Image (tube, rainbow, N blue to C red):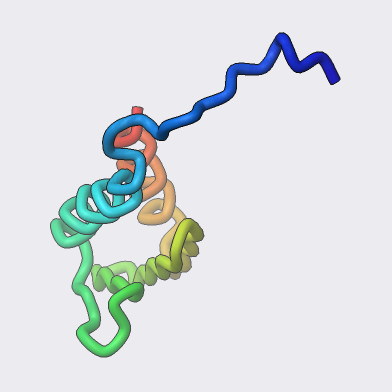
Length: 85
């Protein structure tokens, strides 16, 4: 391995420790517009529409979206992609 080609960070950039917290806060703000949050399970979000239920489970850095309606899944994915772009 060529050590000269690597950049070593001796001190983390400002805010790296807070980045996950800021990401979660931003994501929760978005999810609360579309979903109900469960008080007993903070990672579970539910959206109820005339087409059925959409469940979004969030755990650390994993997300699972399950729904009766494929259009709702596509909408949530597009919204998250647009928000992260």
